[in-house]
Image 1 (cartoon, rainbow, N blue to C red):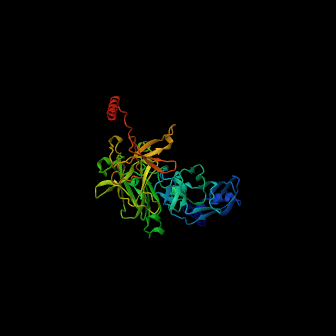
Image 2: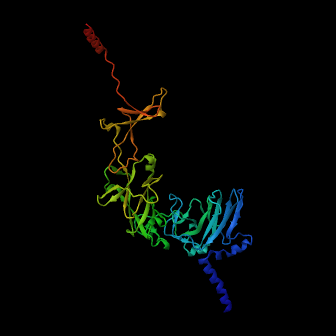
Amino acid sequence: MKCTTFTLIPLVGISLGFNIDASAIRAAEAAQLGEGAPHFGNITISGQMQQTSLIFPDGLHLLLHSPNAHNLSVEKMDQPSAPAGFVTPADSAAAPLGSGFWTAIYNYSWSIKFQEQNVDGVIATIEVPYDRDMLENLNVRYENTFLGRFDSTRGGWVVDTWRASVDSSQNKTRIIGSPNLDGEYMLLGRKSADSHGTFIQPGSSGESSDFRIEEPPANFQEQNDPLRAPVQIGTWIDGFQLEVRSCKGMRVNMGFFNASEVKIQQGFKAISPYGYMLNSSEADTKVAVIARLPLRPSQTEVRPLESSRLRVAQFDPTSEEFRVAYYPASNTTSTLLRILPRAVEIETFSLDTKWLLIAAEPPLSSGSVTSNDSSTATAIATTASAGEDGHQALTTNTPSPSPPGFDNSIASPTALTSALPIATLSTEEGAEKVMKIEKPSRTPSRSRMRRIRYVKSEILL
């Protein structure tokens, strides 16, 4: 009986180690490192871009190249700065990581700091081992292990998918070639059958169509400012994306609607064949949202987006039409609408609404423009087009009529090539000189000249 009891005790200890502390899992590896292995605390790394390899007792491996010698502090943190559930990609345009599927592989994190400030000349590879048995118990595939770095601005862990790597032959997860080593790191696992991007399906048919927004951390429960909550990002199959800070946990669903079946504000037209309809399980919860409506390739190739007339229309229940949405500025930025290379980005404070991508109607053509006393064309002198005779070519820009609610700051004027009643030129002294351009008088015909001479001869007589 005694032998049986002593045999069971180590087995129980090993089982608890698998679920509680990673140091028990890596005890054998730490013993093989010997007394010369670095311990947590202060460490000096060499310079001259020579490779410095540091392997710590729990298996953390730092591979460093630095032009100068530095003092480095590496510590284990038993209380990570944020729960594992808040994970976002470093680049929002990168492959989506999903939300609501994350767990911590180990119950601690690593803090890495240089004694000097702003050390950015060190090229670092960070490597952390994982145990396949533990991953199986957590329902995490090894391809879905990531090293996250804590971001105080987002309030969670950020994964640089471009530098992330998994070595299945050695059971290790890496960040390769990071130019900035300072930070807090944690080994994270994603509970998903997908090993690449995790996209949300439209509709509300099941878990695959839910954007799961996690409950904020315990220290946030009594706060009502969503801008202080962690960032969570959901991306749908067509590229539509929501970046949400919420005071409560909830589910968000998105569905499509046909743009041809809705009424749009006068002066605008839909440039997308479909729009987006959102609804959440907590409509009264305070949220801060950044929405990104994707642009189709045909919309990004026709003309530069900086001079476009793109707008985002929001459904107005009062008028029962889609109207240009003007959102109040948040505390983080004063930009209401931003045009990105592949999306239009807006800010809002609701997850229960409808959006449609629209554009202002094209301005009147030059053939339909009539001259009158109230409309004046302004000529802009262009020195770049001056000819050999020193004369400057003039280009006329006439502001196009703006539809209701349209902001002229983004609309580009239409160039006209008609005659100019008034021209504004810059003199050498820098002052503006206004000159009237008149049509040259026609040379009188020969018969008219004879009549003029005859009249003059009669007067002289």
